[in-house]
Length: 162
Image (cartoon, rainbow, N blue to C red):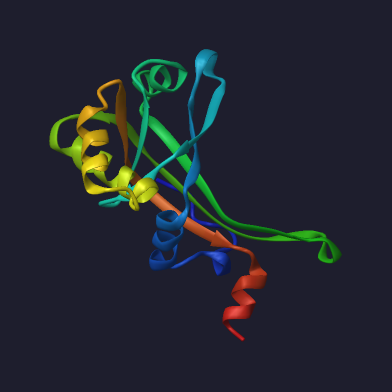
């Protein structure tokens, strides 16, 4: 169903792919927007229980697009170092494909906790709890990942292999 990576030597292992998506703090959600134009928007996210979660206003372009067609892709860039003398960049990135949906109940609370822990883990427990339980004007969106791959520059592959 999903294409194989053309440059398979640059494919990250599942473990390395997961490490990238866990350490990155922002990604780009792409969906089918108004009039079938692609709509891509940066979001802060957390990768938790093999799903991607982010918060959103309850209404707007992103939510309308997801409700019309839940199929999305999500990309993160972990490394992007320009190497001028080689006319290239050394990169590492991940792309996921899945279906987005609004979450409720216990899943919403768990995802919200994971988001708060990732971005504000150093705050007092009481303040984090208050934020999680008191925020009712935002929704939490989950991407149920159908396919995820990571890729890195061939120079990183060569460096690993000596």
